[in-house]
Length: 225
Ligand SMILES: C[S@@+](CC[C@H](N)C(=O)[O-])C[C@H]1O[C@@H](n2cnc3c(N)ncnc32)[C@H](O)[C@@H]1O
Image (cartoon, rainbow, N blue to C red; front, side, top):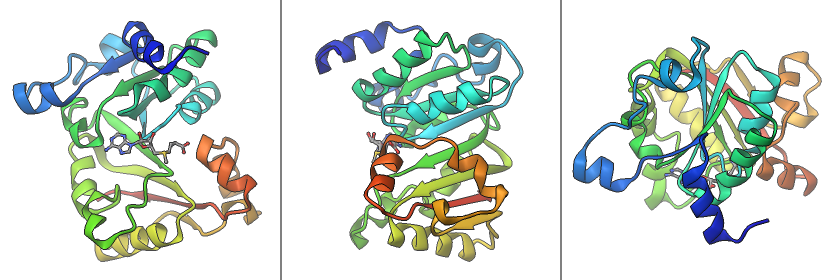
């Protein structure tokens, strides 16, 4: 396993990895090269694009890509040394429906064009529990508005978290926007219904850790309007 600095270096050379950072967004205000062209120029197919925001090591993105070869998956995180793991796995498994982008969630409207993304996964985000940090929560209305800039109209968002307060907060935000979630579970691994089996198949790195510690995993699926 290479050291951190070597992972940073290798990430820049991997054909399935891209970077879009602060200078591009703030200084140049330019869009990423693949903006609006992910399907035609990178994936070279017309399949839907699903992104995982804050993907960490990217195991979930890779797991989904293996399971659904007829969909395209892109992991997003600002830590390239973490995504190195998933990117390397995807290459070793010869998965050509996977990519990783080192960027901030806040910049995604310059990475994807309107309607370019079909689904979003938000997996174990930082709950930003302090009231003063509410605006940083990834399900704050300001982020939901942001996602509408690149998600298909009425597009699906999935959320997995172990944090009860963050989950309740999210459900309140949805209620205030008159969004009725399609699926809600406060303890995913105690659900018997087959409607949840799909999302129990693969665990993210944090999900596995919390699950092993006996924490209840919360999940919700909703369409953004
Ligand atoms: C708690 S970890 C969860 C990782 C992974 N989703 C999992 O479940 O194992 C949160 C991840 O979100 C990333 N992150 C936090 N804020 C971000 C932002 N504004 N833009 C991009 N990534 C962010 C962090 O770098 C970190 O890898």
